[in-house]
Length: 435
Image 1 (cartoon, rainbow, N blue to C red):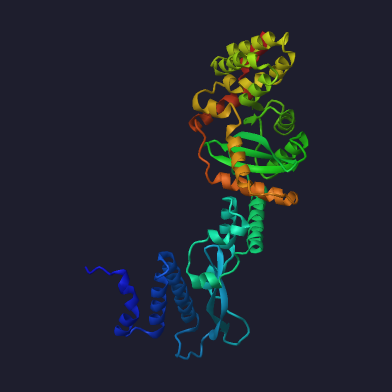
Image 2: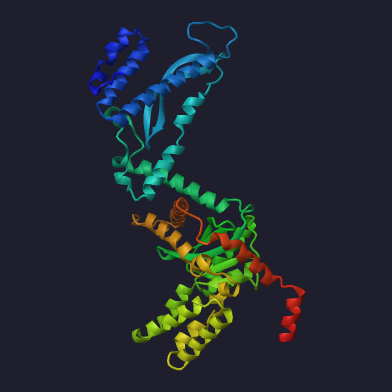
């Protein structure tokens, strides 16, 4: 087989004439050959636009019939050409498109091929992805692919204002989808709640983990602080959208009393709650002088790693008594919610799943992605802007989600919560006698 050298591309016009190809095909091949001089991508763009033109003409033939063959029964007719635009690599590119009208001239007949490529959905999606990747509106045009000088000169929708409009539209769609998504099909085993400080306000966000270990951003609410009213509104909204919040799920919280109250009000007084051990450790040692912190931190971690719940609880209470005399504030911090730092131990959860759920790291990781996407924002104008950016950041974080470590043990966790919430009659009798 003969190899075709790049130098031979320039002779495509003469070759087309030798093969006696139709004039419009010869012209298209010549334009493609010219595009090759600007690189492979420009060549592909030129070829793609030529193919789009041929597709539209082919669709016209299918609707109207072959050109030059009169058909008395035709339902539509050709009506010349008019200027149009298609989306290409985050920009709008002008093209000439054929027009078709009904045979009685009463209406324009739309071409499905053109409608598909003229859609602005792709433009908004590209703008959203580039902005979340921290490409500024001023540099948006420079981030585009090289599509050839002629196409680039004729393109539009890459200005700062056009990109901003596309981004606003894309982020509003992300926010609407997040807040209106039907949650009735979700089988959640774990719910995590945390807050994001943003421009003097706080966004309370919820992350769900399904029974197969899949992470799902659930919703967000904005408030002045991470208070109970905002958290309760968030959880109540989830229930209204079909999510079954009940006492057979594990709630992982950072220790804020407001979040704990919201869970109690919406999910029930006996809902299983795991306090974040990392937050608790930080809160306790912050009340201590530097010289006392290492041994207290070691005692806490040893107690939390103890597989036996009774021994772990005894170790934490012993540490509380040891701190009470010299550092009463540290003892008080440890005492608050102490037993809820051992919920996983009490339920018999261990291994990778325990390491995953003993802290709020999964939702903190999601929040980290949200903050990362917002780094280029210099001025927050209003609440709508803040909500849109956070929703877009949550959607961006979801793209990189993987199942949580230890997900195979989630059914065991759910079964343990059910047993605890619905004890057998024998266990109830034993508990009554012991009391």
